[in-house]
Length: 120
Image: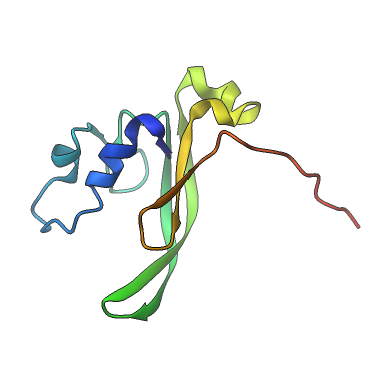
């Protein structure tokens, strides 16, 4: 998950770097070994997810393509001081999300609300 504090670093990693270039170095963040998956996580992120890809769906035609990745979360890592925020006041984490469009539109999770799901 990306916080407002990590937004610029996250954006730097979106560049089309060659495979041999470390996005961690370019973004100035620290890699840490994951417990289950064979991909490093970002130390500076207060919430990290280890996921397994279940399905990848490509949309559009080159060069205007998009990829939708569906995954299964295998393990969730949450910094202790943020655990209550995750369950009670998630907006305090100051998370951001990409909305798509031309690729430059993001949102903040500061304005959240709850809605009970119906039961049958």
